[in-house]
Amino acid sequence: MRIGVCTGPENVPDPVSGLDYIEGTVGDLLRPREDDAAFAARLAAAQAAAVAVEAVNCFIPGDIKTTGPAVDNAALDDYVAAALKRAGRMGISIIVFGSGGSRSVPDGWDRRSASEQLVGHLRRWGPPAERAGVTIVLEPLNRAECNFVNSVDEAADLVRRAGQPNIRLLFDTYHMARDNDPIEAIRRAAGLIAHVHCAEGVGRGPLGTIGEDQRPYFRALKDIGYTGRVSIEANWKDLPSQLPAAVAELRRQIESA
Image (cartoon, rainbow, N blue to C red; front, side, top):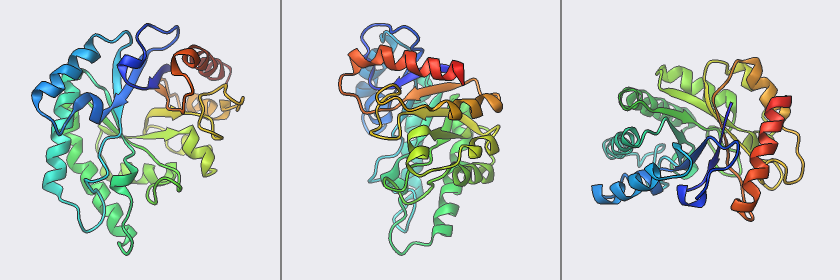
């Protein structure tokens, strides 16, 4: 498995032993709401980075709704098209669709309708994602952060219904731990998981902060033959000083799982 960190490229000015890639954000790196000049500056920064930029998260901003009565599919698809086009130019392989503010279901809106909306979006976005060489991964979020798509099983069902090869699933050890999402759900999602986030369930620190043993998650990944990316998405006190030890601890837990 390959190890990355969720941060901007400027925050990792030098190579870090064992760190394979950086995962930035759509808003910072792709600038889908800004002009070509703004994107060109971030493209240059990504290309000059000490560690390769291979993924981005925070796909849809909260003011662009993906569920509820205020969804504007045309405006939404224009935004997604711009992001995908620029992701392809930057060499991004993964876009993480967590975006709790965007997909939270408004009060009074039927959850079945919200599910149909989300599946419809994923079906529409699959072909342009494939053309751009990008995989969009749907991320379950814990219930304290979002009221919709909170478990690996729920997300896997939506991905299956979308039926698009470039629409896949992410799981995050932090969100799973917060909501006691069963590890067996990882095995049930075999073939769908294309990206992983990790942090400790208490405090959301990087692995090694309080010593949580997350090897059961990585053991499940090995059981399903997963060999892809695992990004540290954590709260840092001092990223430059903490990152080498965090990468080493994540690698230790993966290898000993």
